[in-house]
Length: 390
Image (cartoon, rainbow, N blue to C red; front, side):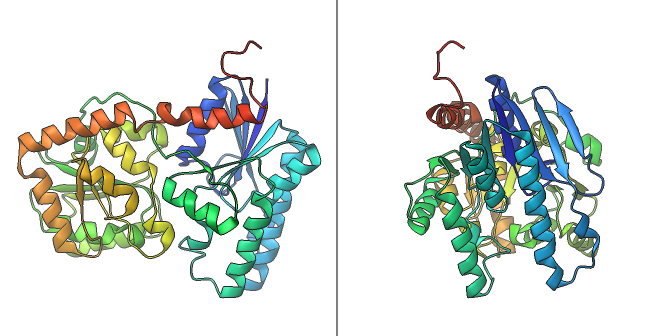
């Protein structure tokens, strides 16, 4: 049984992409250990069928949040990740995002094992890195440039991102592994209505994901506040959760706008199926946002929800296919108008829902793209070729 070590810079509680990849590898007979970050309230170890999650504690996090101590904290984390990966002695290392890339590559070199890099984000253009001073961005580029060249396979989430990655790091274009969800049944439940005390016949606009200002959540609240016949549910964790709740209280729309908190990934399909529209109004605050192609949009389509999205490259084809509308995430009136138009005609809305579900079932699903993941592992000799006997 092949042992895969995945390395991520989060707690792996809500990382649906990592967990999809884990389950796919487990299904073909691999054992997977995920090295994640420990946060208060998280278990240090989780054991599941075929895989485990180990969350690494960083002792220096208890030190004051002084800027000059940040390199110490980062250094301790990188060291702990590297040592943990070495102790596991896996058959391959699979790194998610840039932060654990160095320990993954160094462990792979010492063990003589291949490293797979799941880029996922445009590192230099992420919200938290985009505004770094030029010197620090240069060092970050050098870090990613140096270690990606040691990776034996690289994934990215869309053709646009893959092209930028290849040009920036002078490498062949990564394999495209989109953020599609697995095919899941749609039961048309009323769970959101029942749990949140919403009138059963009231249509729900749903946003799930990080609650941050650059996701357009405050504008979405303001837009729905002007639509007394519509409810809004914001599911997710995030630094602006309290700002969202404060705005709801300020506008006096708490009976229709709910901010209940995050939901575990395995429960999301059931909650999503109880909504009527899915919203993702990312703001163009950095190129990483502009070229975003996140899971939640495809979660909405899988549940048969038409989408309300920003007019960005990854979303334009969805709008062109009649699966939703685009709106300026900075324009509250335009957002409200798009919601009203999408819900105005029940017959047209139902036809649009059927198109969304059909597109998800036919092509925009994880089962359709999982062979890209497994194909890379087979090329590296970690897995046997398809159809070969053990």
